[in-house]
Image (cartoon, rainbow, N blue to C red):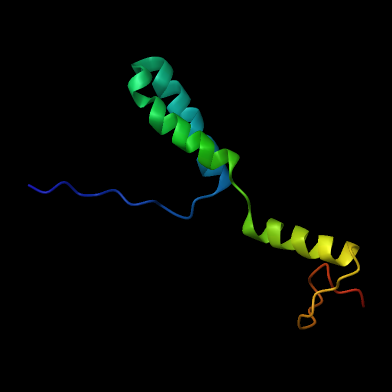
Length: 84
């Protein structure tokens, strides 16, 4: 009999990673160091987590602050638009 593979129930978010790290910290304390590699991998993923939208917004804000406005189509919902 073939075992059914579990699939994620949505996108990976910072909150899901935090929950996973918390759970694996508990597992390591309860069941031993054999689970430490999973804990470390999830912890590293969390520490490296960056929201793509936040990173893109920060990049464009930095460019604008340097006096290098991006040459992009106009949009009223983004920070680089200086006109109301």
